[in-house]
Image 1 (cartoon, chains in turn purple, blue):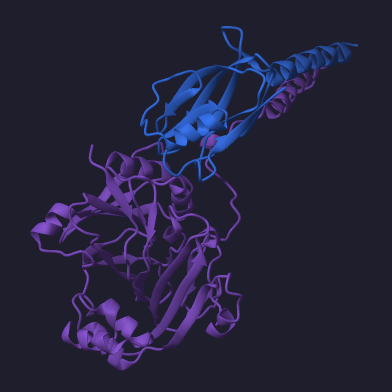
Image 2 (cartoon, rainbow over the protein chains, first blue to last red; image 1 turned 90 degrees about the vertical axis):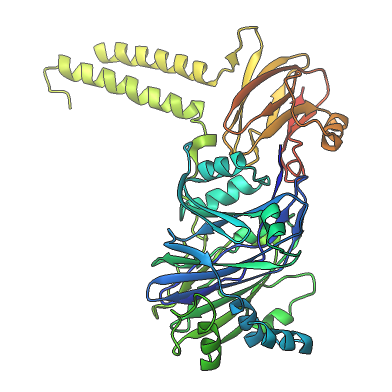
Length: 360
Length: 136
């Protein structure tokens, strides 16, 4: 039987948030023996006129190793999944992080139980992409039946996301097709997902999927919104994060929050599939995720509407009210109480009837 | 008078219900049946009390979309399975594979020592998928 590795991709997501937008995953590479190789990820999520645009890159991990796959929670049903532009993510990194000289030169030259329902299938280069709708168990079953190796925390993590959105995107790297297309190890394939949504959030917890609790999770998250967004959890300022003891990871750090320069927007607009981006009036936020895997039990809620009220539910911070009942059984005590109520109710009704009163 | 009679009958039925609900289910072979649910890669319950020499019929239900195992034994047994490569347990006493969404049974007779139970699919034991059986 073929074995696949579950790759949480080297992702870049950009979102221009008007009201807010989610973005995806990346992070762990789960091997058939259950070990995880962590990779730092970059994602851009952008939200503009009620449409969320995700741009993320899936890195090819090498030929001759079978196929690789990822599962990414989405905030809504995508209308398009297309090949992303070639330099959008790199240009954002260049905008916010000092680059070594060689990089700058290179950049200038490069431009339930049930069954899950398949709602979109497409191929982009060596990637096979399937968008699914279903609960945690249904999506997990689909993934398992299609050769994905799910780590032990997958049931809990899938349920964490399915409670908010039943939409998941699976991405599989076909090593054979990659070889035919001449992809080399480390080459990325950008993917651009277009999602109409009114409730944007950025999945962060998925980054820690399959990782040991002590493992460091690192990612760069870029947001492009129509105004300065309110975020939940509130990120730390870089100055505060740098004062933490060495063994404490800050979680979310707000590295940059500024009006997007017209130069940046012009460069991004010139990339493939990015013409929808306004030429001015956008806000750029750069967040650095630096967390212990065991602590990364939240997502990033974004409110760019100006109301300043990011949703605790969207951040995954609301206390769980209803959990999957699949594993829970009614205790004997509860059955006893139910029996008491039924028995006394029956006799009470009988007494009232005998007394000539109507039973209520 | 009639009310008192009904109350007495109700209390008797209540006591019977309580006894029936709280008493362990008897297996056809005379052993106790213990139901264990696997949910989100955790055993529920994760701690059991048995008597020395008692035979327990385990009914294990896996509600997860991934496969699991239920292996009963001491630390040596658990270590051996953790290092082992056996991909599927066809059903030795106290050693079964529980496929995603399935319910399986296995029977085990306990001696005098406390034992562990757990899952040794790669990464699952380290994730905390284990429980303890207190014999005494």
